Length: 427
Image (cartoon, rainbow, N blue to C red; front, side):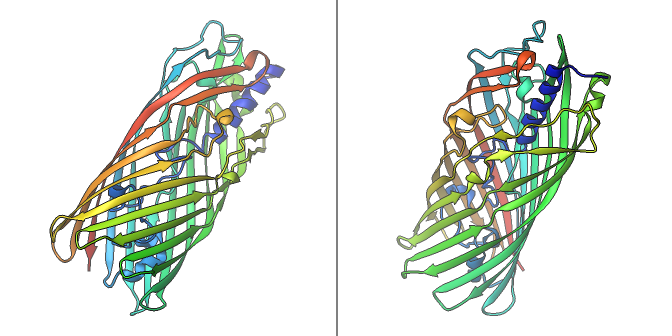
């Protein structure tokens, strides 16, 4: 079936929005996930590259594994409850949809679960071997299918899996170094509405996945008798994505096709410290820089598409590098119980003028509390609770042209609750 020019352009714009939805809001700024252990969650991940208190050190800084003298495995999990809504302040739907503007609400909160696994095995007195299976990037938002901004996004469900073997080497009593490699998979399923004609729309769904590869490096030093510092670097990872796009209804069948793209996920650098204030108190701090400027443009290319399939235009996003700062404390309540607390501040990489419904990202503060209980010499339990409080995010996003143009104008606000738990076992 031949498509009109504005229908073709509407479909191409919907595709572009869907593709970038693979990079969306998470509980940290941008779309990164900090939740790779529960022992660090209680201090808002302050000191993460220097503390090395369990096998999760293999992920945060492989050099800090050198402090572990026994084989240890860590199993952890995190429950995330995102409560967010969009407050409409003048959104306009496409002119071709006068009979179905949609509901004037936009709740997009969702629940999600993040598992973690870490293993450290001492090879000899100087070398430790580690393995981490983690989820460094992720997203789940879910608007109502008939909300007023559905032409720029409905559902985003993104998962990542990173397999990271590593090794540490103890240079001397003060200094250690470490390195690792990563194989990372990204998996996405997304949806939005597309204008097909007068009061006629299609649900557009894209699904895709891909693998990318990178490395991480670390160094840790006991700079004074009371203070330990760690520096950890993770390389950027370029993901080669393959997938397909499908449209509901026979009128849109000619727009179905395979898709390919390259997305460069950012590198990061963390600088951490852990100080023993006295026999009871530890003070932890962290500053993490993330190279979000890798996200400048997005281009998806059709593969084996029919002649009627609309091209997908390149879009500019112009993200900027950003920082995260955290400080926390650990109080040794007894020989078996530690109490933890921390606070973190994330700076968004998203410029105000580039904010989208799939990424209503803003600066945020995280408050954390936690506790650690040593059951016996081999077994330790950690639990933690985090409350994430983002700033209100102003959205003014216009996409499409002619009868397919829509403008989302409003404010996104909400919060998130994160409950974390893990068990560490020495064997």
